[in-house]
Image (cartoon, helix red, strand yellow):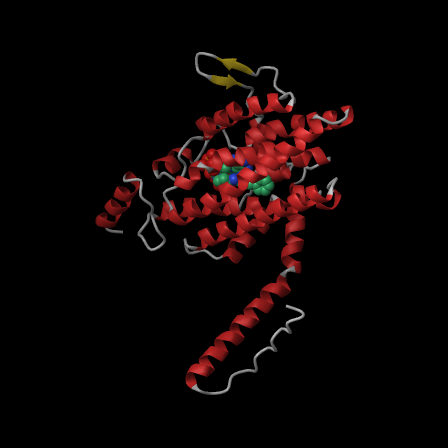
Length: 330
Ligand code: FAQ
């Protein structure tokens, strides 16, 4: 590194412009981004499991189609994010291996089980709601490919939150049993959703550095508060009670006061001791192993296509082309 490169990097950050893949960047900036983007990508992919669990049991055809689309969106988010991480010089395959052998994390929230249909509503409303609050500022992250991926992701997350709200809205206007089911789901998902924002600022390892680099625009506690302020009025519309007796509006600060989540529980879940950690990773490992033939087929196809291109440019006959797919099958 020479000091001109360092200065150019710092000037770009100070001007609120973006760092692009070919620009020089400090190694620690690159490592921080790989860590955060990979954890984010893994969360989207593992995050398909809790709701995927309900696709086959959705109460109506329309709910099933909507949920299917939502879960597929999460797969797409994972792919945009792996692609953004790859611009930093790592491969998606390497990142997947780091997830599977426990070297990289994914969000704590996806280690909780989905016990009833109302959990799908609570995830959409609270978990996607928290994701939006956390991710909208990431659209202004200093690393260009991550910021651009986040713009598209956030648009889709808005639809996700609306569908969760709509599920709960329907249930809270249903029978006593449906209302109780909605309330029970909110009771179980509230504190894990608050914990998604990470440890409190006072003990957050990376916030200060990431904010100076404008990777994170706001601290964990700031965003947690923003989330609570957003959710309380929505809970009133839904007619559900947030399970916090200390919740009260502070007219002086203009914010809702609330009981923080149990951070010991957060750290236990992050370190693999949550209710569904083992199940989530086992499922992901099985999917990875069962998908090996797809990866091998893609590599074999790429090798054949490259050989064909090389033989065409040198004028010799290459391997035969695969037959075209007949119209009636395509
Ligand atoms: N879970 O110093 P900080 C979604 C770790 S996507 C697990 O505060 P940082 C969409 C952290 O990595 C949800 N680990 O860290 C969806 C670090 O560990 P390390 C995912 C956590 O990075 C909806 C250590 O603790 N979203 O929901 C958690 O500055 C429905 C110290 O923490 C993102 O990833 C946690 N909750 O701030 C999909 C957004 N919190 O690496 C499907 C991008 C902290 O030193 C269905 N990420 N840790 O070993 C971020 O904004 C940040 O990385 C934070 C953490 C805010 C998550």
